[in-house]
Structure formats: C-alpha cells, structure tokens
Amino acid sequence: MKVLQAITVTAVVLALGTLALVGASRVYGFQRTADWGYQPEQSNEKAEFAWSRLSFNSSMASYGGGGYGRFGYGRGASWMRDYPKADRQFLIAMKRLTRIQGRATEQIVNLDSDDIYNYPWVYAVQVQTWSFNEDEAKRLRQYLLKGGFLMVDDFHGSVDWENFMSGMRMVFPDRAVEDLTNKDEIFHVLYDLDDRFQVPGEQYIRTGRTYEKDGFVPKWRAIRDDKGRVMVAICFNMHLGDAWEWADDPDYPETFASMAFREGLNYVVYGMTH
Image (cartoon, rainbow, N blue to C red; front, top):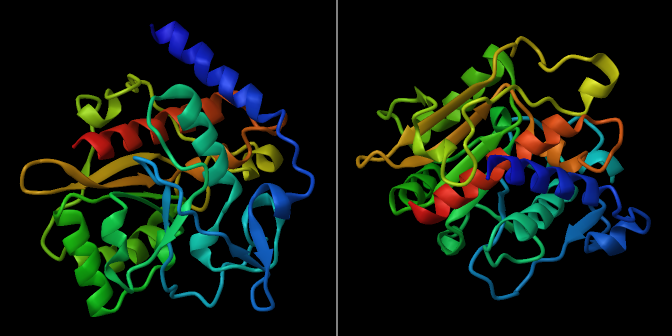
C-alpha cells in the first residue's frame, strides 16, 4: 500500500508538470484591479471542503518578494506568498489522492467577521508578520476552540519564531506549543510520515540549501485543545507552499514536492476528522 501511495503521489507531481501556465490571469481566476494588481474571484461552489487561506494584517508594510507566487503579479501582502498557484495545485492533488469533495478554487478568509466559522480548515503563511488586534485574536481563539483547524507554514529561524509567537500569545496566552512526534495521529491519518525531512522553498534550486535564515532544523509543532486535538499545526523551518507551487518545475526535486503534498493532505484529513 505504501508503495502504491508513493507512486500515486509521484504521478500527481508529474501530472502537474503538464499544466499550461500561459494566460495565468485566466487560468487562476483573477480580475485586474487598480490597487494591488489582481483581485481573487471567490467561489460559491457547494462542496464539503474549501481550501481557505487566512488574510491578516501584517506588521510589515508588504512582502518584499515578487508578489503572488512565482508569477510576480506585483507586490502583495505577506499572507499571499505563493498564492494562488500553490493553493490550486494542492487542490489538484487532493482531488486525485483523496475522496474529499473540495472546491476547485481557494477561499480567502479573515478575522474581521464571523465568516471564518464557515471554513473549518485554514492555511496561513509568513506568520512571522501577522498582527492582531484584540477582537481578531479573540475571534481566532474562539474559532479554534469551537473545532477549527489552522495550519501555518513558511517561516524560518529564531527571529521569525519569536515574531510568530508574539501574535500566537495574543490568541492563546496560556497554551503550550509542543513538538509533535512520530506517534502523533496527524502523521498517520492518510500517509505514514515517520521519515519526514525538511522541505525547502524554490531557493533550493539556486542555493542547494534546504534551510533559510538560521532555520537549520525542521520542526513539526502544535497547540492542542483540552481534549488533545491539534488546533494549530505549525510547520516551522520549511516551505511546503513553495513545494506545491513549484511541483510542476523540472528543476525542483520531486522528492520535496511529494513530501509536501503528503504532509498537507494528512493535515487536511486530520483537521476534517478531529
């Protein structure tokens, strides 16, 4: 079974390489706007699962990279890193490898209203830049305690960790962050992930390094509720979103992309069943 699973994930990664990336504004569902370049088209498609990305206020004026993923559509906020291509390619993998009925496109959610309660699973990146007011922190805390699941990704090193925790302490001042172990169910709900390794961003193609900043060692961490359920899954010193985004690039190693898809799918299945 494990061999079959490995072959299937590899097949998905190879299939992503056949995507036509011309006419990106048409393929990825954007409308041109005058302010920051492209406006995501929100979906009303009925489905049992929606890939939801958290939009948040940032302590940085803007993310200083190339904007939304590898296409470089202007300069977007830090929460938009790898967006939307990473999200769409993950959804392709989820459709191929699971029976989850998911929307074909992602949903953007924020903490300004109770709308987040409609989306039980949320993904957030560049969380070392997030900034909450008291109402936003309270809403995220209630969302998680009511059964919501948050996966955070793409932040690296000691400074990023402290900045991430300054926001997380507003949400959960008294809950501990713990390191997950191979015995944790989240690593076995779909794929057995005992042999995990650091998944790098696309910078690996240029540098040959799997780490960024001083984030040499990957850490799989979590915050639990009172019953032991993982509420916040913390992917620290790794960049799964880049691996999803670059899975169709022949220069990006398939072994990293496959691991990234397996981890993400395990987190989705865990979040939807716990």
